[in-house]
Length: 223
Image 1 (cartoon, rainbow, N blue to C red):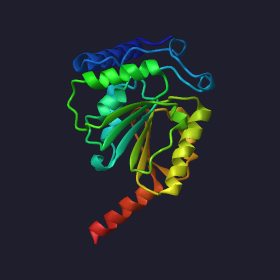
Image 2: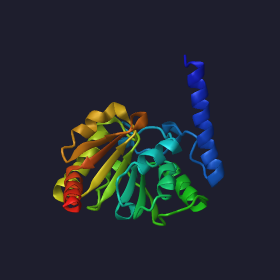
Image 3: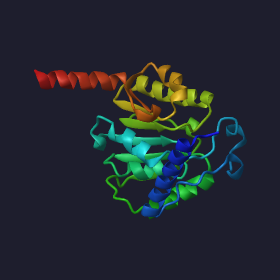
Image 4: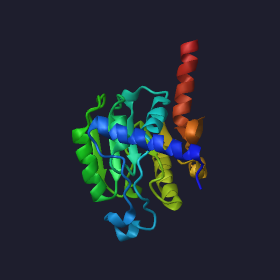
């Protein structure tokens, strides 16, 4: 049974999420369970329910990125109602993309993008209805964002697909994870290395090509 402190903390967190929706004229907070969604039979074994990441957690991990945002595309795997997309567009990313399987959530995400009242620094926001496990990463500098959209085996498949993309075309790229219990999935991606541990169990992984590039730039600047 949760303690009083945990109950208060959960209520405050919920209230902040509701406030985000109210201030921005959107609907991203209410949870949606799998039986209420149209999920293809083949995806039911790995799909998870919709539960939005806390807005403060999203802002925290995005602010921690040591990048020129204008060069990078933000891609949210299992984007649901689009909360990460809405927060992401307040940073000057080149592009913000959401990948969502359920058509019901896709419709809500598109409505939220239209109605969002927040300041947009990125105007190129796209929510795509697709099984994210089938998505082929474009060979661009990107930030791949994950909460815990699929079961572990599907997560491994997706991360390895990103990893292969980096092998084919080495480039700067990041993985942001808010699911510490599947850390080993990211550790298995040999094109990435742990770059930073963040609060709330979040982790930031950077491509080895990106680390080498940053190191070279630092050496050049110092000489």
